[in-house]
Length: 325
Ligand code: SAM
Ligand code: SF4
Image 1 (cartoon, protein in one colour):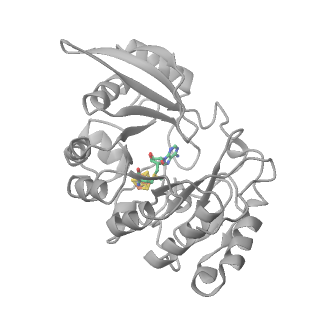
Image 2: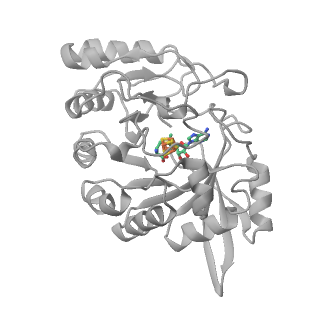
Image 3: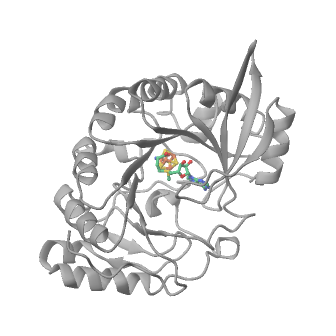
């Protein structure tokens, strides 16, 4: 691996984490993510673009890549991309976020390709509610089978992610924790960000609701790569006492930008320094024709615009499906 100068933003934060969107497309239509119908636009990074780009990022100090979208498992080459990235010198962790629709068939192959960290989005146990929230393709039983397959495949880190919406799924937080723990997963609760519809619930209120719904919570010092803060929980599940971790992402009430360590690249190869910013640097053309030095310079140029924090509370945004969550 050619050492390059590490990536540091204007605030002095070391950038070690790349979130890479593999596609804008999605088979679900979650109201909070894609309020309008998104169409795939322009060229999408192909497997060799991704391999080259991640190789250069790794030389600049990126240690972790999360694959997201859109729905990353809609890519036919998803298992091959994971295998390429886990084999990239310098990359310590490859993670994936999915809606779980194709997980039953993909959990085993993804684990074999070296994937260690898997997040599955799951907002409700109620089929009608899920259909209203995420569209007709979303099927509770299918996602549950996918999560069971992931548990059986033995991912070292498995998380069940829930966006908490007032008067929609705020009565299911305890059940979601018990469900996650039954599968050896961490239950994670995400504050709604203002991309689409729905009313948010703050992290403080989520914790109160969890206690009301039978989960006792104590603070836990676990810190991962991202902004989640953790609690350790316990709850009776029938006659069985279950225990496990819960993660809370206070995207709005606990501005998480202070220790931000990440950079994003969209499916079309646009580098974006901040989820809540609009500045983009296109990389796709460079990846197909330019030298490694020119690509490195473009990445540094994009990072030089990284602001101290997001301003999502007072700006309007594109959809999450376009940016890559
Ligand atoms: N399709 C995959 C999925 O749903 O897991 C990956 C992409 S999705 C954009 C990544 C994560 O962003 C999901 O956990 C989703 O619930 C979350 N998300 C989408 N819109 C959001 C919003 N408005 N506020 C908070 N989280 C959101
Ligand atoms: Fe698709 Fe994921 Fe957005 Fe839902 S949250 S519309 S599954 S990209």
